[in-house]
Length: 479
Ligand SMILES: Cc1ncc(COP(=O)(O)O)c(C=O)c1O
Image (cartoon, rainbow, N blue to C red; front, side, top):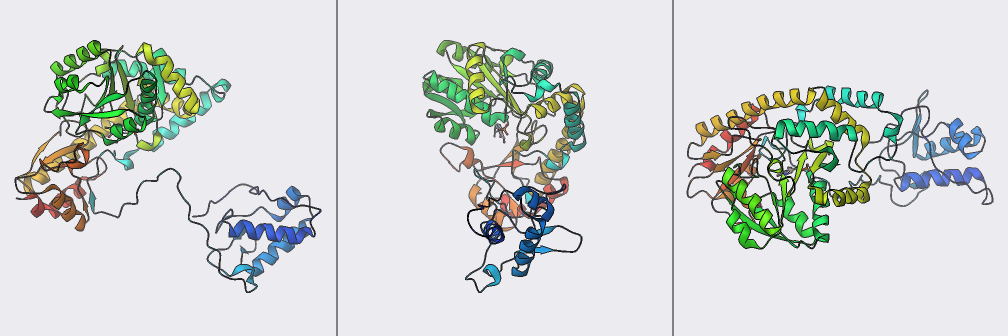
């Protein structure tokens, strides 16, 4: 789709060389070239003839003549009273019997765009919150408020650790809601868990920490990022109480990445005994615990679990994110750093990007301080608890042999398939019926397909689609 430049007249960089022959011929050639090469795309508006003449230091008549010529050749189009635009479609070059046609190049998304997903009637992909519930009005209010109230200094390069205002508000919020030992001086605002983990891994690499434990099953990206940073990711099993600390001790790792409040993807909570054992391990080993506190905001019928960082602030790097509470694309997260690592992590952040965008940070601070963030969480807890009830009901009705665990928090659950039902066969069979189901094996280090389980996300799926999706695959889920 063409960008619809609004405003008086879009600017255009075209260089003419007054020593190189007639300007009109040059201008026509430059415009043709800009269109053929895709610099100017179908539907894009060109500068007005008056404005382009001013920019190029030529007469307006010369530009009008060029535009008319290119219209005649089919490169440009213009209607009375409206702007001149790049014409659409394929056409022969220059209208002069040229060979071939020009095709506006496809717009490429740099850096690995999300894979295109075929439309599914129900997609139980996990990790995505309800995108339709993003609080657009509140965010708009917060951005406006941030732009209005920010002092001029907010537009300068700032503290790479993040806006002082946001760190102050976030620290108070995390002390209140997560029982974290949050100190704004030891906090770094980052662009989500992904960046926070990357910064931490680089600091650990420089400290010579080359073996880092990850949960098995666990968050695949954490293991991938660990390997990418040059360390060995060592899988450590997770059971019904969370990560197995005895195995962690035996692994030889000096750091561990884990999801204590709501283990990804099994949904178990790290038990109080294991929490204490983990902290003792870190003290004995001079180790570092990287706490992924990704969706702690959403719990339903279980006791609140505080952040692990509150137990051992000098051993834990705690990473939080708005990816579940607001939306992944906002790309704001935070790190509570042990004092011994805080300066190095802040330096990594400084060298990476000089700090996260200030206005977005101020907007988040306004959202938190005004109570709108809490209100959004309350709303979403209601939404997700209705969806998890819909999932539990649908499975009970259509697949009673399936048991479900991990429903007490977040917006995904684990479905345990009955004996004799193969995980991949269910996933493939469901896909053929346009239902997206996802196996646990992809989150296991060994990729073992036993025990056969599914990880079912219901964050971005309405109750009706949940019911219809499960009904559509009921026979696949029955042994
Ligand atoms: C276990 C876990 N941690 C963290 C994240 C969020 O990462 P980020 O803040 O980079 O969006 C996700 C996203 O799906 C996740 O599943």
